[in-house]
Amino acid sequence: MSKDYLPQFYIMLEQQVGIALDDTKQYLLESRLMPLAAQNGYSDVYSLIKYLTQNPIGPIHWLAFEALTTNETSFFRDKHVFDALKNKILPELIASRQKDKTLRIWSSACSAGQEAYSLAMMLREDFSYLNDWTIYIQATDISELILEKAKSGIYSSMEAHRGLDAHYLQKYFTHIDKGAYQIKPALRQMVNFSHHNLVGNWPFYPKFDLIMLRNVLIYFKQDVKDRVLQKMHQQLNGNDSVLILGAAESIYLNDLYKLVPLDKISFYKPNSPVKV
View 1 (spheres, rainbow, N blue to C red):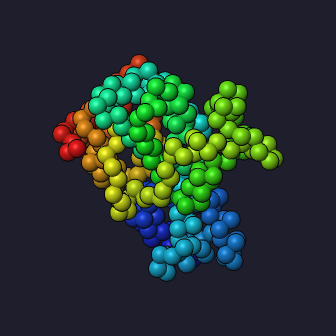
View 2: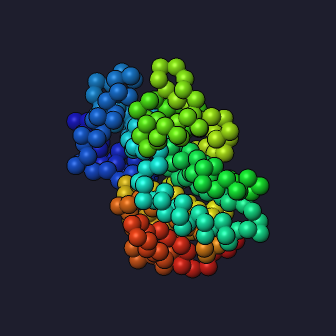
View 3: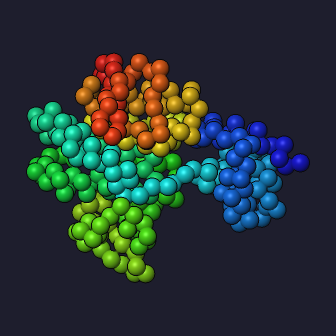
């Protein structure tokens, strides 16, 4: 029966994108892959999975992998994190980078771009005195489809109102057709979106002062987490640079990072020297 191919598919999924699934998540497979199976003429999800495991990696494989990634996000998601960025993390980074007047931020696994645009809005709104600085915001995701949406900066009324008040909507968005909103060009130009698979080969990136890697590691097994965190460590711009994970994520038994607790969140700094 087609379900016999599930173990092979789980291995393929983890090898290609890092996501660890097992038989307890069959409901997820069925709900996420059913549209793709139907569109491509398969009788059910398990017939599609059989095909995927029996054929070389191709476009339909990546459509399946992308369908199984989670793109849940919102503007200014987790208020405590953005409060910490505004009141402590960014001011300290800015103070230590006065000489070069350059700030580099990476929003990794950026989904539809809300996190990256939230950072851009915060910098415009609360750090307007940086107008003579070089501000570089890199935003990456594994899904080409979701990146196209992020680049467009177009969000439905429901998406736009999740985390944004009238002030931000009026100042940084244009109200367009069918109740949707589009981020104004000046803000879109602050963010560079590109494709990146965290468990694949990494392209050349500059060193970053701040890396946001939120709600990604929870989908990876420990060995995959360790590999990603080691690579992230190499991308940090000195020992005062910052890595922020999701609220449910922690780094255990890893001598590369040290935990920095705040009132309502924690973040990480390199614990061992970073080559700049």
